[in-house]
Image (tube, rainbow, N blue to C red; front, side, top):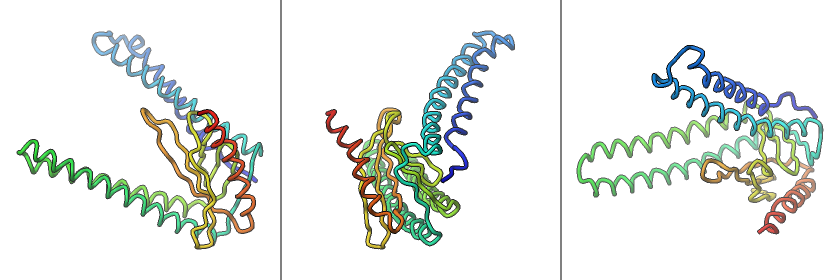
Length: 251
């Protein structure tokens, strides 16, 4: 098995470059002779924020890159699966249907909430109805376009890249993307083996990650090649036992 590149490492170096640029900006006022009260202090403060953001992001992506490196060295790899063109085509089409359905549901929810908020604002303000209507329509349009283009982007990505997956106890490198459910604030929420009746067994893994003031949830659906069902069951048992039971014991 072979991973030809380590995308998180490339991203980490990009963020490291941004952090270095931030450091240069911090000292730029002194270099060019810009007085602090003429914008020098503000420029340095902005550079400090850029540097901090860059170093934090670089640290996170270097951690992800180490996980990819461990997979490249075949450390703790529970399974390495590849797929025939027909298997990957079936997965791509099913994934597109589910992704589109989920995005449609989210769009409808946002649209309903936006309309309700618009009605409340119209009743409370009792003027500028056309402005309120334009704002609500704008929110709905942005939500609709975001849902549409994100769905199309995922579909085209899966069609472009013939998938493969490396599964470890702490994460999976699936179709050139790293998913981590242990460490750096991430945690496993659920793992199961699903058969949707189409003959396509899939590992369903849901994990959450820290983001600003909340946790964001992510779900990946990994197709199980024919003949690997028993391996998939062992993976569900091992990862669930290591992560979910350990978390419940900590409560």
